Structure formats: structure tokens, C-alpha cells
Length: 399
Image (cartoon, helix red, strand yellow):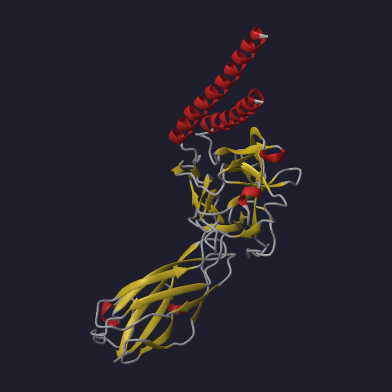
């Protein structure tokens, strides 16, 4: 009996040492989760001991590894809970923390094993489709020019300023206006134009703004600004519409809606805090970028970036119920339950770190200590077998 019990101990410890050696070997594997052999005692009827067995080999999927910077913008790491969702060519969906991602020839985001990263795509109009999960793809083409149509402008007009010495406005005469500011605009072909605003104080808390596009004084337009006693803008209440013909042939006419919301009149120097237009020239794709909320963008040479989708994360009620296909990839099971899908930074899900990878969570010191302990246990069981053999020899000799 003691021989059989010691043999079960040797078998169990062998499995434990296999798990430990696998952990040590994968201490540098990205996204790897350490394994642990879990022992259970074996008994027959009437509480007769039969030895020990390894009832389960589990992975510490809930313990994160450290985050290390890599410099590659499509290397991704999860800070917190969740798994990347990937789908292989056979349609099998798996879950991983190993964020080795790149793009294939068609612009799809794929991991180092060829699985396609899953997320919410965008529609033809560039709107995120939150209800649909599919392969994420980054546009490989260029970005066409976009004509400027809106201008958000926020400034402070100095309440201490006096009216200009001359009443009749002339953009070439500094004595006919108080301040000016120039904004770059783009037409439908991506050609650049300038919109200059000339601010003229006409009375207390009242101003007139003259608009000149590309220095064309003959087509200048104007609008009025009015503030209350607290320096807050009360007129206009709607964006000012500015229309101008462009001197460049074949381009649409510029039509700008200029929003002054937030503009003030305080007793401080003239300053501009916001000057944002939506137009831009054409650009070639230069790369891709993923934000901490999982939003995927294509970046272009004109400084713009275009939304391509949002990656999703998965979580499970019972992480220990996942089926490991290797040390860094898992499949759902009846025990784990169905995946709970969500987006980064939402609810129980972590954030995304781009240009970084999650290291293995293996504690080498603990593994080496465990290895020494397993070795002593192994030696103890072999000693039991050796002693049992000596006793049997002695018994046979006595007989």
C-alpha cells in the first residue's frame, strides 16, 4: 500500500514540476498567466488513504502582469479587467491578453497568430455602429480634402478699449478698428484661404465685426456683437453665416457658420482661446492610433485622424472556467459562461495602453522556491519507495 501511495505522490509532483517549469519557461511570454497544480487527497471506502492526485491545473487569469512600453503603436495592453476578442479564419472566437497586433494587406487588425481583432465598425458615413461586432479594419487610402463649414471662435474683447479714432472702417487703416485676427480656411479642393476678422468697438458693450476673405475688401460683410453688464455675450444667439466666393477655379463657394459662444468682454487684454475650423487639405495615410478608450483612428499627413472603429473587451463571470488553448489564449465554456462584452473605460473594463504590452505574471522567485519544495517532496516519496523495497527484501530473506 505504501508503495502505491508513494507512486501517486511521484506522479502528482511530476505534474506540479511540469507546471512550474512551464511557468519559468514562459516568464518572458507576453500575456502569459502562471499555472498551478492543485492537489487533492484520494480515499477509498472507510476513509482508507490511497495517496494524492492533481485534481486540476489552473491559470491565474485574474492577476495582471506589468505593463512594458514597446514603441510600436499597435502593441496593446489592458490596464485592468478584460480580454481582447479575436476571431480566426475558421470563425472561432478566442480571448487573449497578449496584445501583439498589426495590420494585414487589407488593413485588418490582426494578432501574431492571424486572428482578427473584434470591435464596433463604422458605417459608410463614419458613424460608430455600437450594435454590431465585426473585424476591425483600418482604411488604407488617402483622406480627401474637406471644405471649411464651421468656425468655433472664442475670444475676450477688452472692455477698457475706446472706440477707434476714425469712424469709417478701412482694413488698411489701424485707426479704424481695435483688433484683428486671421483664421486659415480650406475650400472643397483643399486650397487654403484666409478669413480676417476686424473688431470695432461702436459703443459700450457693443462691437461690430467685419469679415474679409483673402483680402477681398469689396465683398466684406459684418455682424454685431453685444454683451451684458457681466461681460457675457447676448448677441448673436445663433452662429453668424459668412459666404464668400473663392478666387480659385472649380472650387465650391465658401460658406462658414461662425459660432461666438463663450466670447466675453472683460477688462483684460484682447485674447483668443479657441479658433477651430473643420476644414483641411487632402492627406496621405501615415499610420494608425488607438486611444485609451479603444477608439481606432487612421492618421494622415495633413494632421487629421479619421475614426475607424472601437475595439471591444470581454469579461466572464467565472474566469477559472475558461478553457486554455495555450498559455495566452482561452475559449469560453459552459463553466465560464457567455462573454460579457463592453468597451474600454466603461464599467468593469480596463483602459487600453498603446505602444505597450502586458508582461507575464509569473513570479520567478516564488516559482524557484516552489521548485525546490517539489524536489524535496519528490525525494521524500522516492525514499518511501526505497524503504518499502528494503523492508520487502528483508521479509523475503527472513522467509
